[in-house]
Image (cartoon, rainbow, N blue to C red):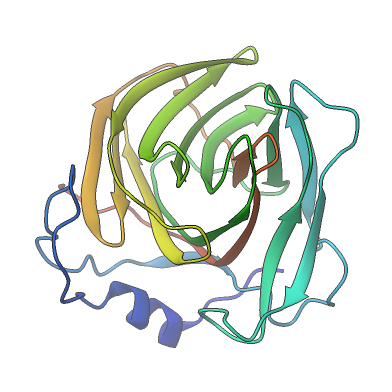
Length: 231
């Protein structure tokens, strides 16, 4: 279900008084976006997947992970979050795609918390997605620890850029990706961490959420806005 919440937007756009993350640069000021779509999962029924979303996998494992709305007193925006519980093998990429979306240039953000995982943890965003085997993705991983942006082409993941960050298991972070033309810029908690050009996927595509292998994670306050004119 799509909703726009100006109070939530104002909160996530507020400048944070915090130290610059290693591998990232301090924010230059808040971007004032035009909201296009928002999902906060608070009006959805607990115990079910959100309407309009479909679970997919790249390199499918033996059992599809369970994406469900769950009540969470620690949610950034109470009362609900979207949680993936999975035990998939190392090669599997877990996706949840918003089926009726089609965005080309965009500013995409979500709150993510890595809950558990022995092979992998954390997760992130998918955009310009054609199908479960072709898309861009940026994600954090508390186990490695790093923040990376990739493209997945015909099921093959190719790293575009990486930086070392140290997200913690059980903590919430805002992961943000902007793309204008072939320019990709990725942020963590408002700080620019990754910047790269790639023109593999030129057309509009679906947006979604992503984890790898057994990374069981929670997501909240996903929204799309118009991208900034200049980064």
